[in-house]
Image 1 (cartoon, rainbow, N blue to C red):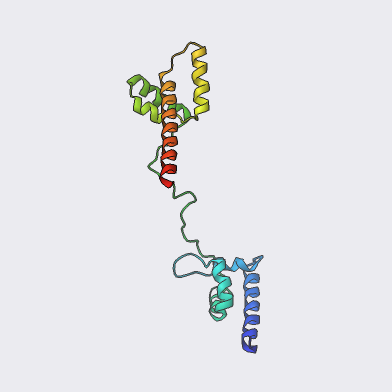
Image 2: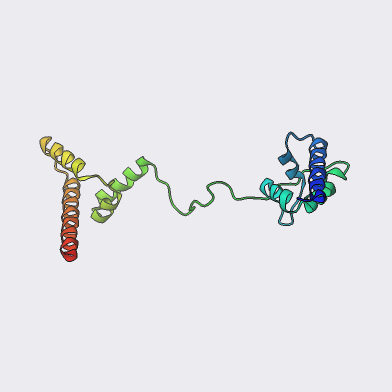
Length: 171
């Protein structure tokens, strides 16, 4: 670094400290709220730090123009930003557990087996077996539970056949 650059850095530090003092700020980043940017809002503290090392002359001019040479510096209104969670889809419906139970009961009453299958929560094979055995012991007939068992067993058999076929093809 040459002597001129070192002097510029010292001058910039003095200018930043004067600006912080003028706005009654606690730290260097507080002056960012007083420096506007062309895209709207105020300068981001990362951008200011980058300018401090890469373009100290321009940063000094901005600080001087918007804070030091102004009698009453004004805070820049922040740029409108998207709210957190704004990427969530708005067209999806959210159902409570009771709502899903009501829809499931309506599907059962209507006899819509496909809809009942879609709305019934997925259970693992062990849970299905346990519930099926329990219903048999209590003398209850639950066709949906039997259908879930048959579907789970079919899926398990298909996956086993698929693994065997893949293994035999690899040999």
